[in-house]
Length: 252
Ligand SMILES: [Zn+2]
Image 1 (cartoon, rainbow, N blue to C red):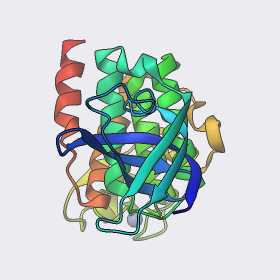
Image 2: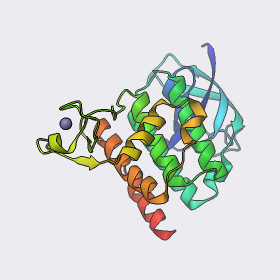
Image 3: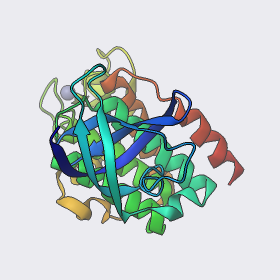
């Protein structure tokens, strides 16, 4: 039984048996993995701080030979707890949605530094309240789409190569001009030139710079609706936490 060291974020926990938890982790070396934390729901466990939702820790785990193929958590040393996220209803609602999207978008055992950095940077922005939450959301959605290989190419019309871009087809990520739009079927989001530039910036900017652009509140709101529909269409998934996020947003 070899011990494995990595670092990772808790995306989700589920009760398992009488006393244990199954934890979905986004790790640096193994990508998304499922791990079991034995006996942590009854006694005072040294893993408890690390098991909090969104906590980012150094992790020691091992894979037992028998049965379910799950990793077993042995140690977690918290590097960043993101406690601010868990302390506010709106922050929690956004972060829970981001975790569900990341969880749904990624397959197990395929590590990707860029995805991990994106999730960490996004949680950091929410935790510290460094930007408008809708802006953080649309950046996360566009950037994750791009990292997964679904970046829309927003420069020219896919029908006639015109530079007057008018709409984005949510199901295949192509863009087109107003004339070519007449032949398009399915869900289409109208985009202004400025919005296309923002999407392009988010998909191409380096690391933390993805959040460094200006746009007015209405533009951000609209882009957030489009990116939400876009990533859902690209991944062919609905996200349950989005309903909760919408309720929380309606309160504020
Ligand atoms: Zn065209």
